[in-house]
Length: 435
Ligand SMILES: *Cc1c(COP(=O)(O)O)cnc(C)c1O
Image 1 (tube, rainbow, N blue to C red):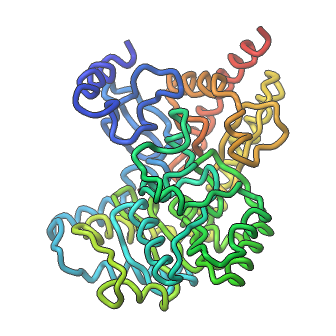
Image 2: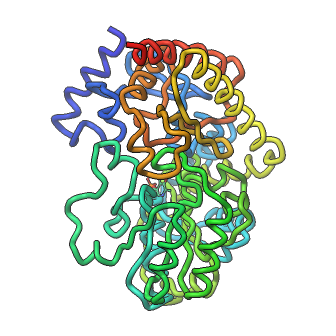
Image 3: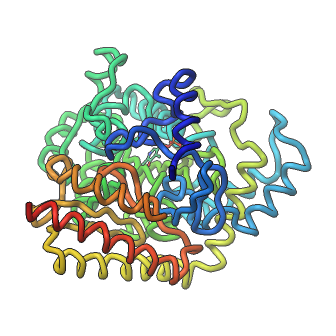
């Protein structure tokens, strides 16, 4: 039995942890599997489970591992940091170094605060936007995920959609009423919501990647930027995924549009728990102890996590001239071949790709541009795709609402092996469609 140990661990896990997992999408529920694989270790582009099966990894910890698992440089930095102590509850020089690296890469960020997760970063970003504008309401977009704080858990894609719902229970009506939701791409709706000048901020993934990848038009972002400026609304780009991923300077460099506040996470922790939010000095100086907006954290700026982030960002910085192009080329290589399989086996798909992020939607629709389109795409075919890959040593995201992530550690040989397996999956899906 290929997954014997994982199954056994799962049986224990569900008695002790809700659903057996510490984050819902890991449970593999939406891809028709009874239990997830439990991972023992990773190396390069591969992960290994408790049954010693190996997989070429297209989750990459949901984005942070742009350099692959156990990257030598990151590992060396982390080892050094660990030896110096775990955490002090007092500031360290390395936190300043990380702040400097972030501010240099993101000219819109004049000052930055480090947190322990992306969730905390967006939560604090909204708080400071409210304080800055003296307004209560916030505007977000359908299918954009910004972590699991109350006011952002409305129509928020990803793990919620995977489990078949959009909003979480346990959130008060008061909170819900202050969160406005617009359709991604619908500029008139944005204009309408903002015209009364009572919305504190617009928060958005400039390139949505938590309902699968959705392409953004530069014009849409430009118009939002203009409307926010006109109405005194703070524009927050949540670049927790897109930051250091679609380009070194994130989506704001990719589209050349400056938000007022940026949130970061994932890559800036190199696989360790980190988030950050930053922006204009006049906004950031509202934060305690300079101003009266509270934000704190016992482990904020943890030295080990910060060191992993520094090494990751430095590596990216030193190699950015070829690295982002190469990541994108790897993905183009994969997706071009997948398009061929789609023809060959008569499996209708749409692939959305931005930089090195991509999602394969099994659908007869011509384009996938909104949450509605994504929901209508075929989950059963995605499930066959996922399970065929898993059984043959490739792990894709366990939900049709997620992006595939790739790292520089993925070798040509691993890409070709991946394609061999994807072809098997497409053949199966083609046969299912025929019947
Ligand atoms: C992952 C993610 C978050 C939340 O980050 P956590 O570290 O999981 O709390 C927020 N925003 C976006 C866009 C994300 O992808």
